[in-house]
Amino acid sequence: MNIILFIVFGFLAGILGGMGLGGGTVLIPLLTIFLEITQKVAQGYNLIIFLVMAIVAIIIHAKNKLIDLKSIVWVLVFGAGFCILGAYLTTIIDTEILKMIFAVFLILLAIWQFVMVFKSKN
Image (cartoon, rainbow, N blue to C red; front, top):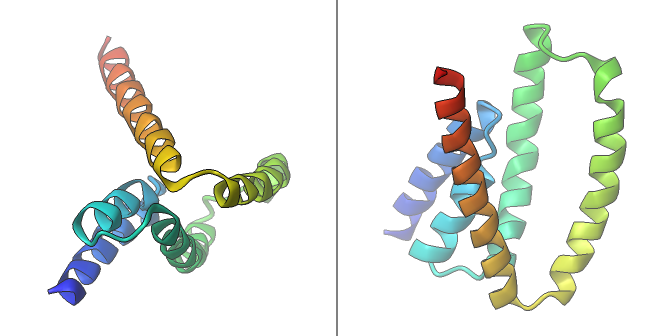
């Protein structure tokens, strides 16, 4: 049964990741809720999966000339720097607190998405 769930969860995360929506937003809650994997382990799985999805997505988007290398330098620099900080913080923050932080992040993300949908209709 778990292998089927891993396949389904991987499918969902892959579709969303390929679209640039962040498959981890779905994958981490699915792994922690349904497979009872700890938050930190689920984040590790997500990072490994993300690398593969990102490479595939980059190849496809570059092939379709959707990537402007000049404009992403600052995002790469600051993203890499804060990635190091985030990875370090994950090692020192308690798992339960990490779950709460991630839950608040998802709630704020959902609220923001709803606001943007209604704002774009006006």
